[in-house]
Image (cartoon, rainbow, N blue to C red; front, side, top):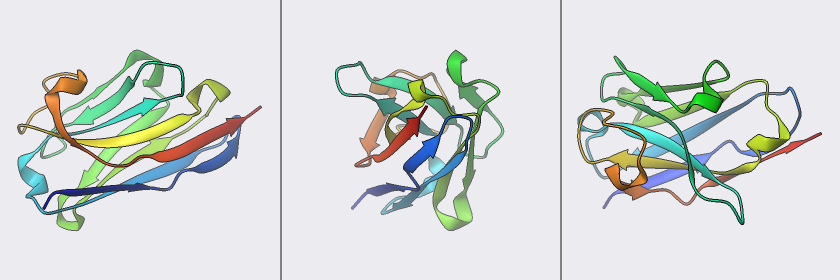
Length: 125
């Protein structure tokens, strides 16, 4: 059974950094693109980044470019999101999602078929 579990969230002051992890099981991670999304109560779900099956291509939403880095280690069945220079607007629950294919076809939520439960990130001023 497909399992996706995010971890690493917490509270950090503005300007700080966090590294999120996405542990996966129940499927061949190296056959799927993976992505991170985030959502704040009362706001729409927002794409963060995606990465293709072999890390040769990544795609970032414009507000995250230069601050966030997505990576993966298929041997460890894990995807990561490193977040730097965090701001209060980054406060959200962050979700890891499995793509239906090998490649980052885009950042639309409909391109991703399985989702974790999320991990909360709170950035204080």
